Length: 85
Image (cartoon, rainbow, N blue to C red):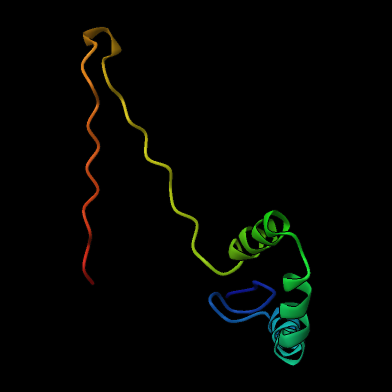
């Protein structure tokens, strides 16, 4: 007999979903005001705000660690390749 209380695993929290919907609605209804507010800021402050907001929109990338033997005194070469989707 299963006596677990709460919502089933994987089901959406109704309160969280409602808050997200209301927040989305708030942003959508005020997007021009937000843009005006951003435009009124100094470039460095605007950049800070955009970077802070990006944390809620863009996935956070995992840091990559680079290990090298610094005793060899050889230059480190890093090559970036474009990945096509």
